[in-house]
Length: 300
Ligand SMILES: Cc1cc2nc3c(=O)[nH]c(=O)nc-3n(C[C@H](O)[C@H](O)[C@H](O)COP(=O)(O)O)c2cc1C
Image 1 (cartoon, rainbow, N blue to C red):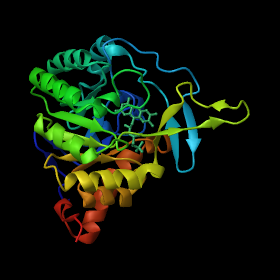
Image 2: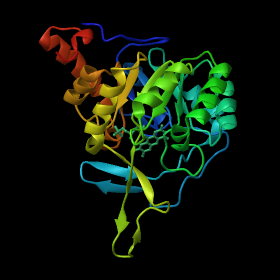
Image 3: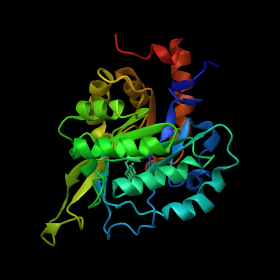
């Protein structure tokens, strides 16, 4: 068997297939469908200091080749996360666990990073600064470079764990944003979060989601995500976890070819709950059939 191991700087994965935050619960929800230890990493649902109920319903809408969500970072809060969610992953030996934090302020993110730094089962911290579904924090961090620098500096100071920064594509200049992350001590980038969109309830002549805007994910955004990975990887040296609409092995190969070092499966977990594990086998089969290694998956 050819090795699928990937070296993401401070984080080594047994293979490049990971799951995207918010699309794989806290991991255990999928253990009936997936041998979690077969994956490269699982990224858990964004957490905040306090438990969050999230946005009022409706929070989901179907779109052609995708879905929109306005979950609003509903989560159990850091206390329950540490007392119940992390211990449930303790027995796993091979898969890396990425905790995703989404504080509404710099201070909240700093506190979350400090708490998670002390958690052995957390192999890396992903800083979500690109959620379109909240009033404070979220995408706002991507729009103010001075604030972003302060945030990254302060979070970096609190943890030696690999720090991944998750960016959105619907920003003024994602390459510049990525360069700022690189300059301020990020170890890796996750590209991309959902793309901000709008849906209309024509029966009631109002906007469908309570906050108006919501996040589009799934195959509909794949070309946008591929472009983001391609553009950023040409300028920035940090390892990139690529995501956005991955639905089959060809999609995985496309992300790796344009510059991703690993990939994340998001929305498609809701359609095919075992897709992540099947993609590990699919990738192994792909490189075996072509008689190449992972490193050969580049553009000519
Ligand atoms: C229902 C849903 C909830 C999500 N929640 C989060 C979240 O809590 N934190 C986060 O960083 N990204 C979240 N995302 C974004 C995904 O992690 C991913 O970046 C995005 O959906 C693009 O990948 P995909 O097209 O494969 O779904 C969520 C996506 C969906 C569909």
